[in-house]
Structure formats: C-alpha cells, structure tokens
Image (cartoon, rainbow over all chains, first blue to last red; front, side):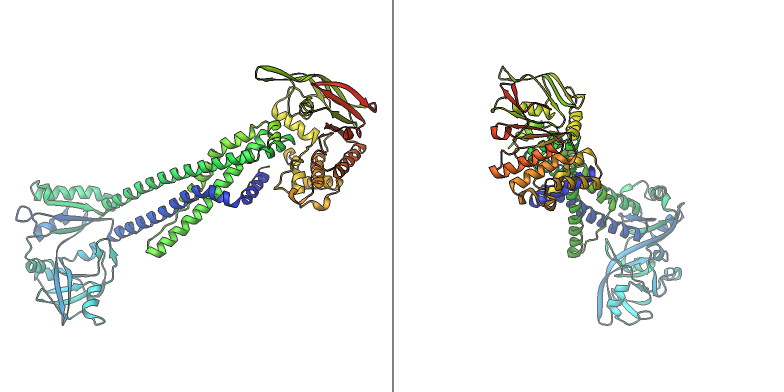
Length: 389
Length: 230
C-alpha cells in the first residue's frame, strides 16, 4: 500500500513537472542556502581554527603598554615570568620595522629582538644554520636569523648563512634561516628577521620589552597559568592593570567558536523561515490538487478506499514533494558551495549531519503541511465527490 | 434462490431550507443472487439515492438493509468501505477511470485497497480485462481508448475483485446507441454467467433488456413488472 502510494505520488509529480518544481522551489532554496552557507561558514571556521592552533593552543601572549621604570619591564624582569608555576618557556620580544640590506637589495621587514626560546614558542624550525643562543644575548652579538621569505628576497638562491646584512645601517652576520611557516591571520610569518634581544633593545632604543610570549606546560591548565601570570604582573606593576594584558590562544578559539555558533543559529533561523514558507507553498498546491482530484477521490472511495488510504495517499504525495525538494536543495547547495570555493577560493566543509537534518526537516515540513489538505481529501463525501465536475 | 439484497422499509430524509424531503419513503425490495434488476424512474424520483443506498455510499435514515446476510445500515465509514470493496462492483455513467493510470492499473485499483499482493493482483486484473475483450489494451490510458472501450475497462474494474453485485448507474448514458448496445450485451452476458446485476436508468429501452424492472417515483417503488423473479 505504501509502496503503491509512493509510486503514485511520483507519477503525479512527474505528470505536473513544472508545477511540482515551482512548488518545491521554496524548499529547494531554503535547503540550498543553508547547505551552502553552513559549508562556507564551517570552512572559514576550520581555517581560522587551524591557524590559531598552528600558533599553539598553549601560547599566552603578554602585551606591555606602559613606558618608564614603573610601567615597563626590562629583559631580566620579563624572564621572571618564566619561573611562574606552569609556564614552560618565555620569549620576551621587542619588534620594530627596519630596513634590511644586502648588497644593493633592501627590504623593509619586522625585526624582532628575542631569545633562544622564541624558536619553540612560535613553532619555528631551522632550515639552515643555527638560532640565536644565550651567548649572543650575553655579548650583544650582531647576529641575525632570517625568515624564509626575507632570505629569498635578499639572497635569491644563494645561501645567506655566513653573509653579512645591514639592519638600519648596522652590520649583522647571518647565522641561520628559518623554515617556511606560511600565512597567519596577522600576515606572513616568513617575512621576519630575528636578532638577540639585548642587541635589539640597544639598536631600537626601546624602553623595555613590549611583548612576552609564554608557553604553558599543559594546555588544560592554560586558564590557571594565565591567572598566575596576571598576579605576577600585577605585583610588578603595583596593581596598574592598564599597563599589561595577557591574551591566550584559547580565548581566540573561544571567540571564533562563539562567532560560528551564532552564525549557525542565524542560518538555522533562515532555514526554518524559508522551509515554513516552502511548506505553505506545498500546502497551497496540495489543496488545489485535492480540489482538482475530487472526482478521483470519489471513485477511489466508491471502490473501497478508506479514509486512511486517501489520507496516506495525499500525505505521501506532500512528503515526496517536500523530500524531493530537500534532496534537490542539498544538491543545489553543494553545487553553490563548490562554485563559491572555486570562484572565490573559499574553504568549504560539508557536514552530513547538516544535510541529514535539512532532509529530515523538509520531510517533516511535508508531513506538517500535507496533513491539512490530506485530511480534507480523506473527509470528502463520496457521493458529492463523484458528482463534482 | 438466495436473497442477496433485502431492503426493508428504507427511508431517507434530507432537510433543505427548513423543508423535509423524503428522497426514499419506505422502500422494500428483495434481490436474489443471479438476478438482473433494472430500477427505472425519472430524475428526482429518488433512484440515485436508492442506488447510493444499495451501493453503501449512503446510509438510510431508518429501515434495514441486509446485504449477503449482513445488516449494513448502521456501520462505520471504514466498515462500509470494506464491504463496498468486496461486495459491490460500480459501473458509472462517466466511466470514472483515473486518466493517469493505464487500463490495467485502473482495473487493479480495487484490489490494491483490498490488500491483494502484486502478482495476484495483476493476474486478476488481466483476467477481468480479457473477460471484457480488452486484454491487448492493458497498457493504454483511458484517453487513448474510445468511449465504449473505456466503459468496458470500467466494467473490468468492477469485475476484478469478483464482487457478488454489479451496480450500474446509467452505463450507456454517455455512449452512442451502437456502443451502448455493445456494452448492454456485455452486461447481459455477465448476468448469464451468474453475476447479479442492478442497473439504474431512465431509459425504457434499456430497462426492457432486464429480466425484472422496478419503477421508482417520489421515493416509492410503484410496481414490479417484467419477467417474474426466479
């Protein structure tokens, strides 16, 4: 009986192709927009999350805003943060834009003065030579490590290690080159020159450390460690909380996920509205169909169809219509998302959960909005229905 | 012979704008298995109401109706649908075939509602189509058939479930004289093969072919004439 009804429903849908398509359009558009937008949204979230995690979820960044002895930290003070319980490594940094020259080629890059720990804290790896060492800091050696892009820009295919570059007019010996790291939300991480922090401080004449990168031993303890670091800083600045800020990657991840959550909620709302609109379209056409087929209903009843047979027939027709719309909508949504990713280079992630949900929802819409017309059909009086012209 | 339809003082009243209309006014009628009964009357005589009553599409206001030994005047919609499906084969003036289904699918329809499994259903439907001489047109749609052929498909649909009663409402009303005569021949032949036929018409020449004629006027059966029953 059900198989028969589904077959009949398909027949009647195929018999009125144009009408069926227009009826399904509401559902198709609703489902397609949700599938496409969710795919793009999840793609973007995934990309951002990966970038953040690329920096390390165990990273804490301390920014110092103040100047002068009571509102700034020197290198030794900054290194005291490394002794806070739970902190693994501390890499204080001073950064300034500078002109780096080799021969006749010059590049404007960010020069960062830091210590040995920076390599691990920022998850860099060496491609050539060595990184900054403790001895370099102690003796304020004029040595530099180049990011891969900067090295390529200045030296081309030549090996920079052992060569001499000038930074803001001072001569530095290149001791190493970093391996390629890629893009981040803050721009390229390969356009960089690293020097010992002691050398950097003197060259830039900065009043203390601006940034301190910390890693925590255990990611799960990040929040507790962060509080301890903040307490330590409060002690150093005598409670002047405006002079510093501690920022964790965890926080950034939470921000990203809360944005994507509210985005998902909004999409759900759009989906619900358009599906309800689509459902009303289906109800409308089903009512027309019931009227058009009054005589058919009369015949079916006369030859022995019960109320539930008629109810089921029209309900199945509505559900087939709406689920077909759901399937076509999923197809259109996947197509649109792939098109967007190809045309605009966007990342897309397809989730089967969302597709199943959209399909289930459109089916439910069919049941919900098919019930009223189907019930109307089932309740028709066979005598009057047979007399209907 | 066995009594198939027993109507006892059947009445049906409608209220229309404060006025009570007696569509059927104490109708008693007995039809035995194998009979060919024609109910004749002018329009407005109550013959359609009587047909709906016999066909279980309508229930009486009072009186009793025993069909094949079972009291059916006070049953639920669902039970009535069931009995219609098993006991009565309808033949309509306008054929009432479903235009989107093939001849075979149309004939299968009552068997679907009876829950007959697919293969058996097709066998029975084909058997009925062959009985009316349209086995070779099984895949045609009603639109591709002539009026006479359509009515024969409709008769096959009525026959498919082997119901004891064939209930025909002006079966030749929409046909020209010659095809109407062919359809009547088919109905007569079916009666000779043992089917009980109840035919409703206003056409005396059609009524003349029945073995028993019942006149209806103003909701009452006036007389029974023709060849005596049995």
